[in-house]
Length: 470
Image 1 (cartoon, rainbow, N blue to C red):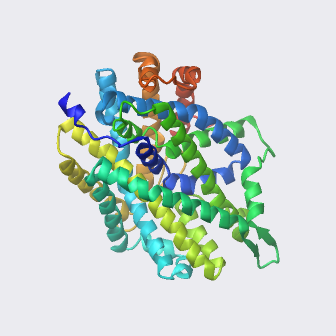
Image 2: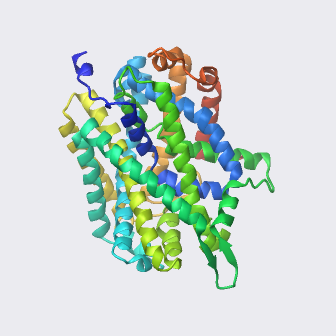
Image 3: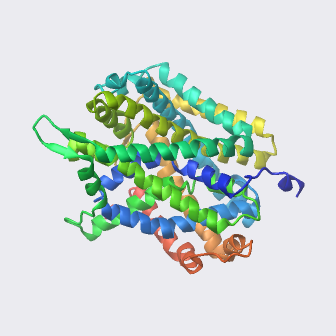
């Protein structure tokens, strides 16, 4: 009990909400959400995403935060404290493995963001837009490793500082700046106009309407479910669920905090930023590259397509590119800190070691993993096909194992634990601890027991290549 009483905590609800939102507003929101929205019919994807965020996302987010606060434990040990047993020990290990696998390659990508931010900051934006620039950089021997290490050390320093002086203090400064940058770039994206080599004029507002108006042309039941599963998969990134992060952050929330209100604020903030990420990117890409440019996703969208868009803007493009990559860097750092904190807090709770020792151990693990990812683009390069049909090397394999396999398993395990073993009252009572009734309680009961596990099982089977009809 003494250990739990001395556990760090956020100073208030604002600190928790900003830290949780900072975790969720990461690279997955910025480069994955706009691509999926463009691919899946714009407004149709947005409507389904919003419905899922208020139902499916709400259920998983509430469950994880409540488990964290109730047990005052990190993901590695929290589940077995709810219900002792080998199965729940394994669930805790899986929940901890997800951030352990993600952290190394996230730091590598963070290093890429640093590279492009420095390129635009020093006026080299046009050079960054040239063909082969990105490939030449990531396949280099030294620079990607140095920038990955720099990014990792920044995240490690924040985690080393602790919950209040590190995570909360950083979130209170960075998140307002990030939000202002997102809004500013989104507004600018709507005002741009461009005439291409064929004399065709396109505007940011035209791209915006493509983004928000549902495209129901050729909509079939199969395509509808495909869009639904895309939106559901994106929610893992948009809300940082099934990564152990929200369990860890929940464990730092004070018992007198209004949990329901905080969860609603996190939902609102994350959904708004995800939507604005699309407003930032889709109109700009459409204006300068047409509908074909909107087909890019992941790293190719951020590090190949967007620099070309900024270069096409002329002089102002270098400034916009610098601001954009500054915003992306803020988002990447806040997410990396939350990923690392989930691991460090797990080591502290499981092995009863200090924050300093746990931080050093995880920094070494992430550094070694990051080196392997960097080598995957030169010395250790190979190409294999994953069960979902995608071509992959080291980074893609790590991403597939963590995101496509372990995260759905963790979410399914959480639904079974709370929905059927410990009982939904475990979470409901935690949310209502302050005497304020839990909103959407009936929805939560139905989702945690029936709908969420069924949807997650379908998503897992599709990710593993077992379910191919959707």
